[in-house]
Image 1 (spheres, rainbow, N blue to C red):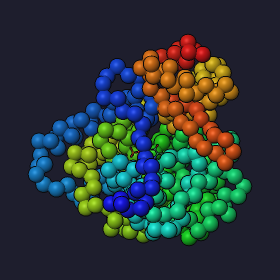
Image 2 (image 1 turned 90 degrees about the horizontal axis):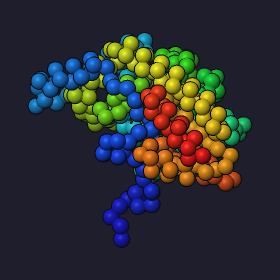
Image 3 (image 1 turned 135 degrees about the vertical axis):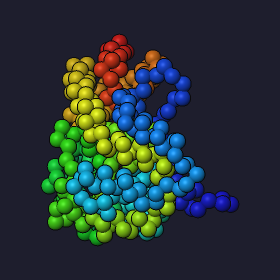
Image 4 (image 1 turned 45 degrees about the horizontal axis):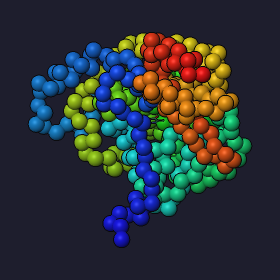
Length: 353
Ligand code: PMP
């Protein structure tokens, strides 16, 4: 007899991307930023290190919330920080969804949503996207009584972004729409959460991360922006000290240096365009990405072989495979690294054939 809860016994669990600990890899598999964080982050952390680490951090993250609120032109009670946006997603699940209730998400998209729903004992529904990554006509009916619809905006692993009108039409009648904007800063036209202030804003939650555009994946910091009525419930659910003193200092300093983030995301956009262009020249189909990664497929379906051969050359990209109602979809997701890294992977792909 298992000691685990039935849900835990039955579930597969989430498998994070490979994180080789030795150096020498061209690592383009988990969408980290190729550029370092702002020097102001390092200064802030160093200063904090010489401070009082024997004292608990501010449970309300007052300074961080103030800075984040200014960025999105809202009051600080619209902000809830977490230990990475993955933790914010967990808090959302625990705040809004009871065992047996329905959680939905597009498919293919971020597979963690399903794992979180399983842990909560919720029912999980995949809304299978069309081949061109658009939403199927029946989506509104399918969403039905979802307590949460999670939508990565832009989507992962495809990298496409949907229109605001499309997104607003997806708000579930008896639940909330979570726009997971882990990659929001990489869009050609990023937004500052204007949708949250629309009439339907009271049923919208946006999540952001510092792992990608701010180059702080190692720090673990993300946050939610939403109407205070929604945030107030989430605050009851979160651990008192879910963000530590060092990560709070790093995240606050990073948000204050908008110029640094803008410069890096601009570089990523330029390299991304080049990567898409070159992949197409090599015979791949590549999505016009709005993120810091590119999803590509090839008519010859040799994706797994290419992934393995790249790996033999110490180039790590992500090979992904999804079961669809008819057949499977697989392909390669390549993080937009530095120009040199991208040239390296393109040369290798040409060689591999
Ligand atoms: N959402 C999406 C769509 C992601 O791809 C990721 C990164 N794997 C996250 C959320 C989580 O990011 P983090 O926990 O590093 O903030």
